[in-house]
Length: 549
Image 1 (cartoon, one colour):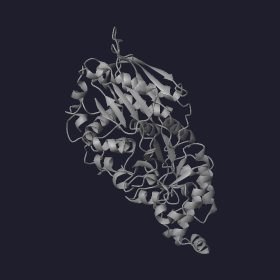
Image 2 (cartoon, helix red, strand yellow; image 1 turned 90 degrees about the vertical axis):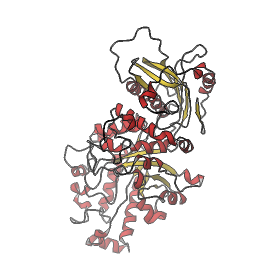
Image 3 (cartoon, rainbow, N blue to C red; image 1 turned 30 degrees about the horizontal axis):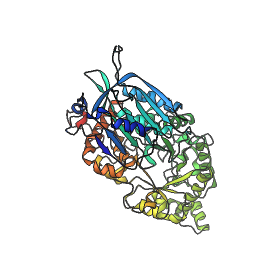
């Protein structure tokens, strides 16, 4: 039995079962099935927990159990009867039993026949910091144990979803017995996330992504326990989103077929919620907004100065307010991204009416930039959103930002330490490691980058919400976006979920576990590229096993 411990959660219902589990004779049995070891072709297969991301605390044994194809769900607790739990169970059951059974097996005494899911809270609100912790216990039937089932206990439905994901990763199809088998039982797992914000940015402006592709990305996020989709919906290249208050805005889409209706956006948000994933929308102002003027040319300072948006025109801010009012009906997440990066104000000073507006207020171009950002923040806050801005706003006028501002790092290291030292919250996305469009960044560089780098004070560490990997789409479209995201996004996902001290002790297992997870993704229909590619999303360099690429 292997044991790793770190700050366990308290689950009173499962602790007596753990005692029973620990005294079960199954711990002393030799394994009746070594197929997993053969499948993974790794000398340490018996000592490696093939779970991604790695749980905080876990014990396992050496027994192999078979799982009933008619695996049933039994729920209890105030939130156990939630449709979110039922739907999640059905999704994972279809994943576990990916191989169909043409004929029912007669006379088979299955070890595992049901999953007990206990959810204590009926509150299904999904916001930043929702409790995603869970406990998972698996034990087999034997003469001294009354346990022949699987038990997941969580405080919320979202913790239960995370537990079901972990369970699904313990199960494999045995091609000889034609059974679904659960390896290394008995299991006892206590788990929780390290950071509350674990994100993936999807850019649908540089290339339009159909709804189905976005849903595939959301499904794949849930497999790695990521919990925030940062939807970079619009940018200077295209404006694909319907805004009812200003219906000409989506004239800025590439074509009339590359758009998202309000109902599409609702569908994405609701689809994500069922998987425990928030959707944070972004409206990047005042730069990166040229496409807005296709429908409303008055937003442009002049035909030759199309961005930044016209800071001198009140219509600009009326329109921003209208966009946010419409989007607030769609996006319930408490964070809203206002961009604010890469703002070049030179053409404001060469546009007569904007130049005059600046001079009347004794403003420089930088002052106008600050005015725009702060006014946009006020609008977002008026809709009960917490504003998120790219780090240039902090770098340029930190002490003028609203104190609620979340600073989003991207340019390099050292920004989150400076931000939290001034009392701001921070999200880490250092482009040197976590920009997925940088195809030459290998998996291990992604894995060992840490959001808390350079931060030693405990109170300041708490201000780092987490981080996100960013899939900018200049060279990614539906044909290659998922293989650009995966498996490198998984490397960041474990860094954001798992206990830092536990990860430090299992460095030797990282590569085989990540290779195994990549193969699980491909089995689930996710087009994940080989782990060891020197250049992301490139083809394999020759024949070989998925588990060694």
